[in-house]
Image: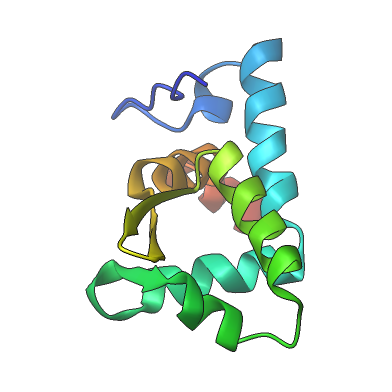
Length: 119
C-alpha cells in the first residue's frame, strides 16, 4: 500500500478528504489495531528493548495458542504496522514507525481547530 503523504501544513483530514483507496488502506490498519490482542502486540514490540521483540517474547505474554499469535502477527504485517526478520530459528518483529506516524497524523487536529472545539 502507498504511504499516505503527510505534509507540514496539517494532517490529511484537515487539508482534504481522503480518497477511496487511502480510506480503505487506513481503515484496514485501524481495524487491525481495534483488536485488543493486536494492540497489545504492537505495544509489546514497540516497548521492547531495542525496539524489536522475538516471537517467543510475544507468545509468552499471552495465554493463547501459537497459531493464534501467528495469525495476529500476520494481520499486523499485512497492514504494514510490523516488519519481521528471521534469525536462525526465531523471528524478530519491529514496529514500522512511519506507518504509526501516518495513522497519528491522520487523527491530529491542527491547533487552530482544537481551540475552536474546546471553546
